[in-house]
Image (tube, rainbow, N blue to C red):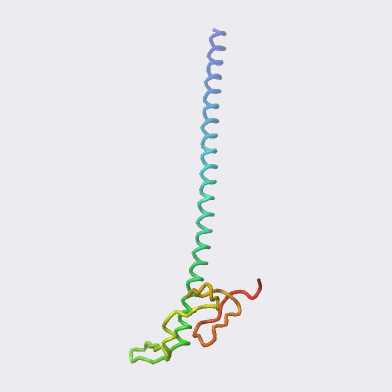
Length: 135
């Protein structure tokens, strides 16, 4: 009888050890999965944060360009107030309506406005460049 009790007690200890080891394996797997998930979520969140920075930068640049174009339209035109509250801008010269060469490069004529400082397009309705004076 004594050996039967010892054998049952030993079997119970073995079963308990297997159950505890199974729980350790399960909890280790859950912990590794959690850490893996948080690492990937952090990367996604960081990427989303950087994308929002880029979106803000692009929106700011677009706002600057649109503002400069509006200023050029205003500078090269005569404003007429309409009865409905809008303002109609009429160009004062035909030169304000066509592209103008930027710079004086004879060998490479272009119609692309360069970002240089100081921008000396005299007689142009163009807005001065936002380029830095420091090279």
